[in-house]
Image 1 (cartoon, rainbow, N blue to C red):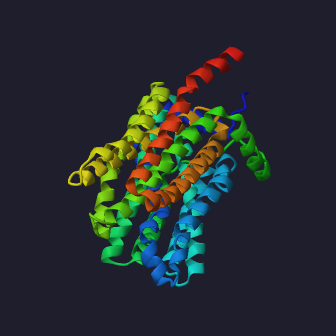
Image 2 (tube, one colour; image 1 turned 90 degrees about the vertical axis):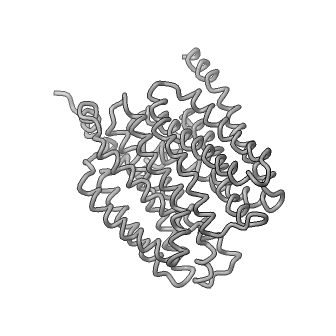
Image 3 (cartoon, helix red, strand yellow; image 1 turned 60 degrees about the horizontal axis):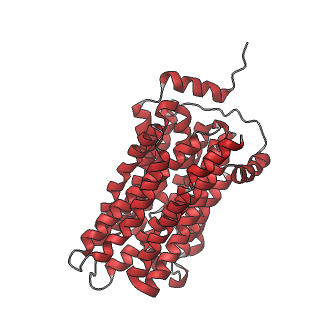
Length: 410
């Protein structure tokens, strides 16, 4: 009798039964709600630092500590999804992030706040266990579509978090958004406990060997290297755009209020529609041309603002934000679809490496954006915004040639 591993049982069930639309919606909503926890504090760094008597020179730590926590979680916790039962892991992390958010909301010293917000970053990597989980459950013919739908929820969470946090802070307090999110995480924990199926990975290796294997995956997986580079460039300019835009709109001649900047940020949410579209395109085998199109769109979106007069500048800037978000979202899904076509027993680790690398690109983009705007205004920042997607575009042009060479060498 053939020995079928637990992971194979899940895969066989997915092929026959598929993943229900309801479960896809639940996983998409969960991704959006959890990942939003990473971004609530970003537009509130000013009032948070004042309330905690934190020096203004150190207020940047609020964002930095969160991002460091998330990267650590990607590298140290996400690989556990290839080793431990996924449902229990996701539920435990969601419950713990609710506790961490509660501590954030009641923190009165910088040390308490930074420790708790760093823990929020670590535990929010539950979303990067949910996404490959959805890929495991989906049949191969619909995997890109399912991943795209789940990722649309994640991107909506990223795009909505900042404006929602700004609006809540304007009418209530910066603490209110963390209290509300903690309650939402508790409710979400119950829903995920009731709706997520079990998934027991087949891997039996130790945790240290699991972590060591990530080095081999990074050095020995050309698809991961390419897709991580493409999206580090894309996510870098995404972060650059949304770091610089509030500074630009708050200054002369626009003088936007915090609420007006929040409403402007809502415009970019429409770019999330790219996720399911990109998933369907990837399922048809058009990943390479779609990647080139996504990179080109992102680069050109910055150039449109150069030709807009002062009266139309804000409108053109908003349209650029939509196109940038569209291109970045599409490229993210195309990359994950390519990675999830590889060995299923490596999916969580591949996804963790992919996310960690491009989030580092995002952190670099934010830093470069604020530096460029201070030195050369919007023109210098937008020129950098054009450069990185075009660099990725040129590298992507070599992809087909390298694939042909690899096939010939075999």
